Structures are given as structure tokens and as C-alpha cells.
Image (cartoon, rainbow over all chains, first blue to last red; front, top):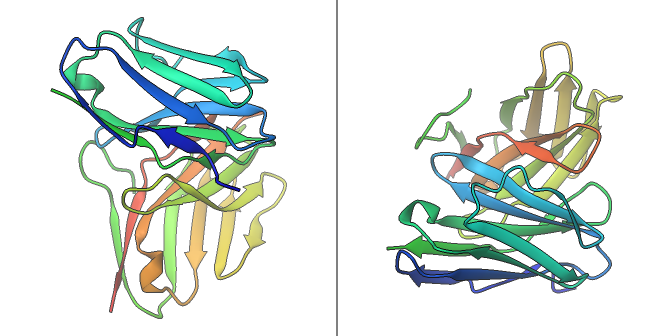
Length: 111
Length: 111
């Protein structure tokens, strides 16, 4: 099993640009989570899906952030427009029961 | 202890010694807990879990202890090895899939 796959692994962009992060969960998992990790705030849950349906998006910072899960094998997290304070590592995780399996993360730098 | 901002608490141990990493969780009603290990440049990796109806669970070289009275969780690593160097997070869950992660503790294994 390839595990959770995220792309890109690194992204450098300029303030105001749109950023799209991608995630492919582990096959057979029915829940998918997007996290953001920073030194200041640690690991924060942004949103999670169950059976492709968003269940809790209370962690999404503001309207600039949006997430979609069009099917069981793909999800995107979009930031538009991006700001320097969005710089962080973004993790996707998936689960079948309670244990979450994390991807390698996307390191985002917004200049 | 807890960390705020840029500095994670750090535990330094000699190779071969036992390590104990502590975590204070926030919600007395949390019923499921996980310890994750995060190596540099990687996503968190599941180590061991425990439910609230237990106070101890053992894995390979790792033991998790749960003290619900004081809302405290600990991870014990026996015969610590250089490969154990990482940041360790506890995560608590209350009746669902939304986990709250602690700030993390950096374990440094000295040769």
C-alpha cells in the first residue's frame, strides 16, 4: 500500500496567488482529514470528510480556504488568495476506523 | 510540560535507557487516545492507542499509561534507540473522529 499521497511536496508562491493542495487517501478508507502544522500553533484540524461529505469545517481559518472531495480517492484544499501567514505544512490523513494515517505533507511558503 | 509558541519541550536520553514522555489532555470525557511519532520532514505516524476503559497498554518496546483522574497520558519507550529520535504527539478523541493534538515533545537520543 502506498499510503496517503500528497502533492505537491513543496510549494512556493507569491501572496495573492491561488494554491491547490492534493490528496489521495488510502484505498478503502472512508474518512479524510486536512491538517495544518506550524511552529506557533502545532497541528490543527482544518476539515474532515466522511464518505466524501464534509462533516466538520470549523477549523477552516476563513473563506479563503476551501476543500472538496469529489470522490473517495481524491481531495483538494484550496487557498485563494494566499497570504504569507498561510505558510505551513499541510497534512492530509485518512482512516477507516479511528486511527488516522498521515501523508508526508505539503510544505507551503507564501512570499 | 506544555509548550507555547516556538519551543517544544525536549527530552534527552542516552541510547539504551528508557524514555517517558508525558501529555496532559484537556477533556475529561475523551474516550480514546493515540500517540504519534513525527520524524523530521514526515507526517505523524501511529505508535499506539488506548481507550478510556483501560489504564495501560503495551506494544513492542512501547507502553502507554492513562491516568483519567488527573487527565494524564504517558508513553514509555524501552531501550531507546537513535531511530526513536522524533517529536511525539498525544491526541485525544471524544466520541468521533475529530482528534485534538497536544503540542508535542521532542525526544533526542544521545549516543
